[in-house]
Length: 314
Image 1: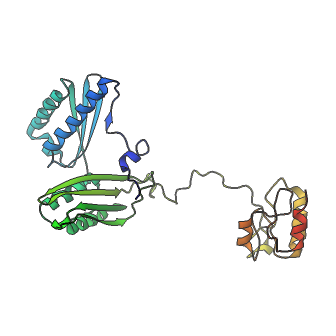
Image 2: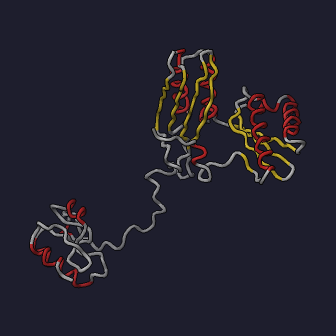
Image 3: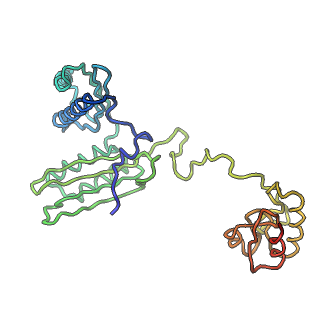
């Protein structure tokens, strides 16, 4: 089996950012790491019904900034901001008296956030809703809200079966190995009477650069630069024969042009480096060489004696 890698960690420093932004060394690193784990666990327990998708923790000297990405900011703030004050005090106690500031960022489309989609399916599984129905509904909703693709996977004792298994659904494009694709990943657990069921979600969000076309893919070739030199003029007599009349290699010079004129009268020969004209074009490209210059090989050993004579030149 292939080894799986977390899609978020796989795309760090490419199109994803770290969720803990601070630096420490020695024992300070261990203490701050456990503080981060305590903060995330506390927020997950307290805001499990508030649509909390991500928690970003930043540290600077003796201050801690906690950024909450949520789809329901009203539940977190509370009436007149009382809930924020309570959370600020409790997080400050977890950080050993550090100054804490909490920022809230609203998620406009929770149907396209992978973590929220996975948690929503987990909640439905805990309410004894069929896992197939829950996954298909999430697929349909995400595609209606403009997702490029979505993939869902549930694993465990599905439907109370004696033997655990995994089932998944997929719709659209979900390229896991393409780093430039804006892929989001989420994981949640449903605690049922039969055991824990894991829910994974991959969402390919559609993002554009303002030009009206999606980023990445085979259509974005603007940064490839010049992919070839001068191809030479095209003769009217060469129309339909798949080639041009002049060699494009400038090192060959006039001698190469004279050899091409001789080759033209002998039959369907190559007139450009790397190309054959007429029959045998695909085989000519596969073999490699082209004209009779000293830098080139012979294309077809079986074609005719003219190429054999030219390939033997120094």
